[in-house]
Amino acid sequence: MGEFHVRSILVTGANRGIGLGLVRQFLGLPNPPEWVFAACRDPKGQRAQELQNLASRHPNLVIIQLEVTNPATIKVAAASVQEQLGDLGLNILINNAGIAKPNSLDNETLENMTQIYTTNTIGPLLLSQAFLPLLKKAAQGSPGSALSCSKAAIINMSSSAGSVEEVYLWDYGQVVSYRCSKAALNMLTKCQSLGYREHGILCAALHPGWVQTDMGGSGSQKPPVTVDESVQGMLKVLSSLSEKETGTFLDWEGKVVPW
Image 1 (tube, rainbow, N blue to C red):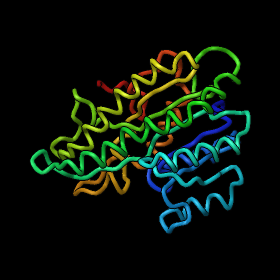
Image 2: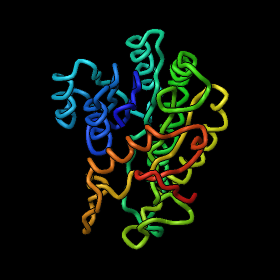
Image 3: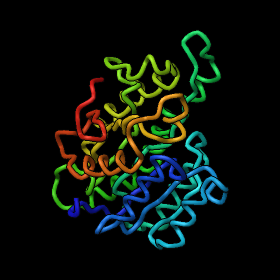
């Protein structure tokens, strides 16, 4: 994986959990990106303290204010990243920000479904639209025609909980709104892979595993995968993605997850 190099990357939901883990791992690569953009809702808040600490030690880390459900902040974030990158473009957009509420089928509500779908599915759509010009620019500036994360990629953080075939961990928690939002995100990924292929942009959905985060570890059972294990695995997957993987749904170990 020492060969894996991208010039620029943006991660949403980067102040904790998997997002923060991704930022750490990218900064720690033998050949780290020239720009790591870490997006979160409140960059100056207490919950972004670890990000702030990292930024004080890594001049290539830029913290961006972003609320994925707010088109105005998305527009401002895209303009800010564009200003930093100039003519270089953005190599990877990782749509990681997401929420879940442990509602069952019987007590799911319009409000929950709307909020979670807006964050987990519409947010990645809006982010990808806003950063498309920068992703196109990166693709155009990369030699060769083959798709890869070193060229340009949209990576949507999905979940096997949204696999219609697997319905992962149903007995652990129904989380209906979360499952529906991730199933929809998978279809969005497929659509993006078809729509953006001509621009040289690879698109894939990743299942990070059942990870020990605030979201994953909120129940009575301890998840089996640590953040570091998950993120190290996903970086290996990202480094190996090619033309044939665009539009696919893979887990953190590179295995295909059924739709």
